[in-house]
Image (tube, helix red, strand yellow):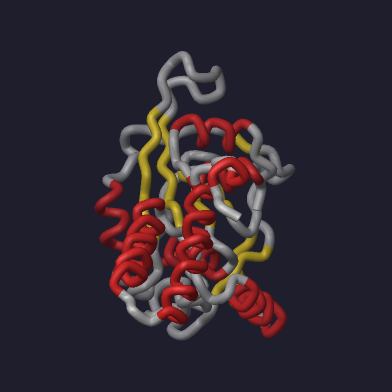
Length: 235
């Protein structure tokens, strides 16, 4: 996944979106551009494909030309949709555990000449290897019930056997967990539970095991916060 895209997905903000739009490398497995909102079943197909391919986003208000260049056109007032309405329409076409959300980005006049006074909407799609591959739950429009969709460069396709193997391998390599996507609050909650278990256990073997889990979780939190673990983490 390109670094600018990873930064945006980790912290969706005007600044990270600006960096992504100004330094993008075109459509990939992880990002799709649409000049305007498209028909909802076709949109759901793209969401399924991106979620199966590692997560990413669909940026609305950007047109990719045939030569690979992009036009940061933005959305007009008529093209701008209520994000709650978008999410509500999609939820009837997507599996229950597929996580996504729509974010609005309105740029001010002074941020950059190519983005000045332009509006974009971004559909952010999470990757959760516990549930992939996601399949279509309905037959509607371009969706076929039971189909598995994936990304292939700039296209969304129905998975071939080879592509399905790629999806499964990614799931196995991740350990089948979405731990890399956990929030700081989730990490801290885990740490509290481990510490409580440690404090209230009388089994020395169990306490020793918990102690090592606590140290590992502490290290994960410090990495999440981009701290220098050599200064704080006990050996």
